[in-house]
Image (cartoon, rainbow, N blue to C red):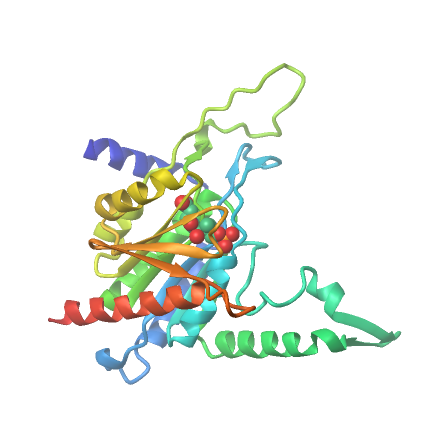
Length: 318
Ligand code: PAZ
């Protein structure tokens, strides 16, 4: 059983196309962690907590020179919103996100900000439209403060191959922080993929009837993250289902089987209204505050998780 699992994992990593900018990503990660983990001349107690937030969905390419791929619904809204609250709570954030999905501090901008927020006043000048000026100013200010202040590192991925290699690199780099590190795994990660070696190289041709593609299971790497990559980090994973009857059971299973510290369970249709936080023997329901127009569920969720992380860090010290 264990050896089959190990084979699946090595076969995934060995056959995955190597990351194009691996060295550059590694360098950025190491610099970011170095700067944030020793802000006071290496005083362990005062070192900043660092969290890796994963956000958006992974794609599964069907061709090596990819024209078609399998995708999922995830918009990255949860990851982007949570990143803002985690920064506010004092964390440095590694934001591992799907290209093209929601970005921190941009949630209140219109869908096409470039075209909708700006107007051309004469052939040489453009200006921000009055009705968007406050939102644009805040987005630019908060984003700049976080990135230029060295508190937000944004790393984009598209495919399942990129995502899992980047998660592994991040986890191995963060492991030196012990319990100061946190993983907030909100990305919707593909469950099945086409192994690179058995994938068509060129665009799959139509015209010969039905198409058979064999998808194999993506290895379950949450337990590897917990046991091997970053064994002391505080790990939160997410579980999404569409059938409420199996949600709790699946979340509890993830807690036990993968050794997560917390599993956040949510349903597709109500995910923006409520989530269930499963930890130890507790199941805590977290709601959006419906009395406030702009409220979201990520605000109380992050508050709860930050407290849980504090307790975990204290317990790990003793
Ligand atoms: O990205 P989003 O805001 O549209 O949705 C968030 C979410 C539902 C993808 C996340 O809360 C989640 O449950 N992620 C894990 C999904 C899963 O693989 O079960």
